[in-house]
Amino acid sequence: MLEPPDDVTDAEVLAAVRRHWAPEVDAVDHLPVGWGAHHWRADVDGEPAFFVTLDPDLPRHTGATLEAAYASAAALDLDFVWPSLPRLDGDVTLPMARRTMSVARWLAGEQPDASSDDLPEMLAALHETPPPATARGWSTEIDADLQGRLRDLLQQPWPGPLGLAARELVVDHLTQVGAWAREHARLVALADPARYVVTHGEPGVHNQWLARGRTWLLDWESLLLAPHERDLATLVHEGRDVAHDPEMVRLFDLEWRLSEIFSFAQWMQGPHVGGADDHTALGGLTHELTRPHFDQH
Image 1 (cartoon, rainbow, N blue to C red):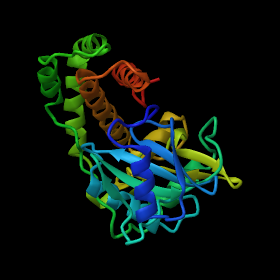
Image 2 (image 1 turned 60 degrees about the horizontal axis):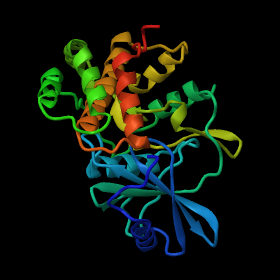
Image 3 (image 1 turned 45 degrees about the horizontal axis):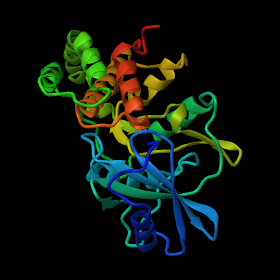
Image 4 (image 1 turned 90 degrees about the horizontal axis):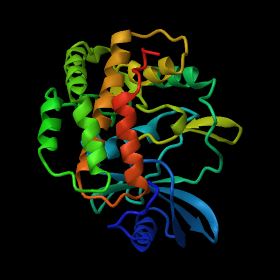
């Protein structure tokens, strides 16, 4: 997130990191990066040492699912995984306010301009790795009556400065969202748990990192056992030639799209002040309502 949270202070973050992970940390600084979660750099003697994440409580990311996902990533024996660190008491995450904290070591580097050429091989290795005991299986979070839920949302006031524009977007695309939700429900029934493998969930360029002469996959909060198309949708979108089931690629494109639409619609319907994060949410809503599907270019 670009703006600091309004219910957690830097001092509280520093105290939590010192108590539960690294007593030697002496300063934290909120970083205006990413989307959804808040992040801080944690320093020791003026040098960056740790990367702190505060994930929001969402239907797809609860305290329990985040603990399972981060613990599972830490258990993977793969050389491109940059995992979260266990707390001093052994758990990986910490409940904080309405969110969940995790901490990784600082990894100096940069985000690539384009997705790594090595990504297909990295994902193949991930999908072939034995599932950690803590890994959870995927199940859809999308309500088959998503159109009805959005219609109910439209009956409420949208009072924020960006609310009217967002509401008009949802109204204009409500019928299409209903069609996508029905198609999604049909595809969910085709997913075979016998084919589930370890998946990252969001392996696109925004979660790749160039450091120490190689590409790493970061942000493992979405790790689940699922059809490998949950990750391969990214490769298909990038035009990579990978064997895949087109219906499963379509399923996970719709899963992401519909989840984002409802989450952004809820954000825009709620109180907001028109800040940088609010404009990002409106942009996300617009994008997901209007972009092509992965298989339509």
